[in-house]
Image (cartoon, rainbow, N blue to C red; front, side, top):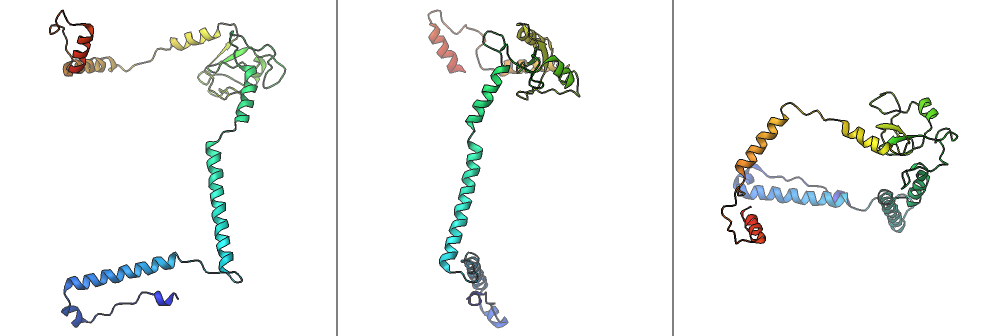
Length: 233
């Protein structure tokens, strides 16, 4: 079967090539190449050869099973990506309630350290505001902000958020944290102010909005002025 579809070479003598016009020779070569490509494509997409002892029916069933398994694999992958385990999320939320700040600003009184399970946590990690490690375990496990001790453990053990500040629970630690945040003065480049002024000058120069109200009459209402101003912009 395959031998019948093999590409046959074209034999054109020199005298025939001279007698035929150039465009007919090119057209014939193109048609022969297209036919050979169609035969090759048909052979590539033909049904696979049957294995010894198998029938076309069993081969079709095997192909169908492989397709079904492939579709099932894609569906499982899609579910794994798009579906969340809400039971685990609810369980994690319940476990973290013992370390979260209550609406009145206090913390649950019966909370124990997540490391030793005995000590009572006193320090509050910011910005996550979890109170979950006692002072002894903080020192034992070298828990500290990364900017103060680079080699320390700087993640909250409950939520793995970065620890930027550790304050004792006094009821005012949140205000102290925000005061500490606002203390930081960003260092702007020396040329920043000049570039900012130059940008403001360019905006004023290229602006098409009116800079005075001389074209407005005293009888105009506020709505008329607003509409006229918007039409200019």
